[in-house]
Length: 104
Image 1 (tube, rainbow, N blue to C red):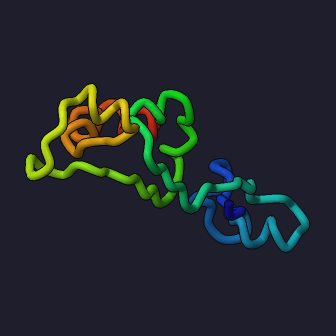
Image 2: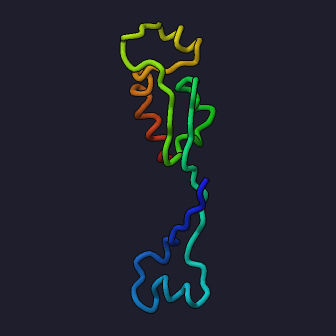
Image 3: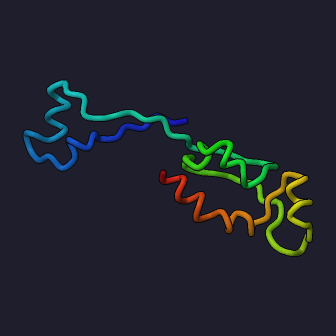
């Protein structure tokens, strides 16, 4: 986790003496702090991990083990799931849904 500071919306774009710098010098709190997950690692799991741990989608960097990338190593979807392995095709299928949830 990393704590980041963001300028509060009401102070964005204020010029000159009304600006955030002047208000900060006057002692006003002009930022909000937020903890951001920098790195997440999902290993030996199924695509459904994101249903059970949606916070993974908020990570700045997500490393995800994808055991099967193409058809060189053939395994049925049921066999892959039994071994908790993901095929790249499953990630691609879920991509749109995962992207929408990560912005959610």
